Amino acid sequence: MTFDPQKHHRRSIRLQNYDYTQPGGYFITIVTHQRDLIFRKIGNGEMHLNELGRIADECWRAIPDHFPNVELDAYLVMPNHVHGIIVIRSDAEASERRDTIYRIPTEQFQKPVIGSIPTIIRTYKSAVTRRIGRESNVTGIWQRNYYERIIRNHAEWDRIHRYIESNPSRWAEYQENPAT
Figure (tube, helix red, strand yellow):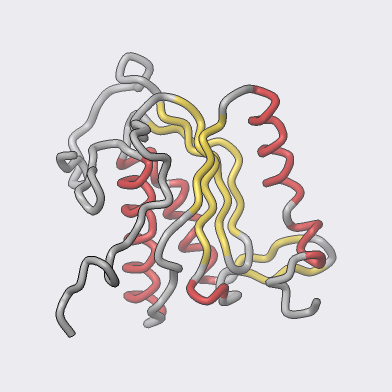
């Protein structure tokens, strides 16, 4: 099959003309392939990580090791998705800059931009996929994209923070929960 731009184009769900390297908070949701329940089980409103979930958790916590201007706020690995708040600090706010293999030049659809949300998420998803493939021989971890919301004020930040923290207790209500 030959490439036909009328049929085979992919549209970005990112906010057009927004600079995703800007300092601020970003609420991220990354979903597993076909919403498979691969990371954890929930019992009595509590989350219990399995080995794949521990890898997803460790890789999330390692994001600031690869992106020195990034801090993590609330996050949670659910059975079939990851929620988290990523905070990008300005260069002046970031602690010492370090060179890393992930510091690659700039992102206009499939072209990485150093320190941008798309590059951070691409790196995270790749790291999880690589480790899970190597350690557990499992493939097909993620859906193709991810969801992000630019956090615009403290009230929104607080609401998102509470949402993330209360996710396990609301799992029984989710459509993705096979028990419902």
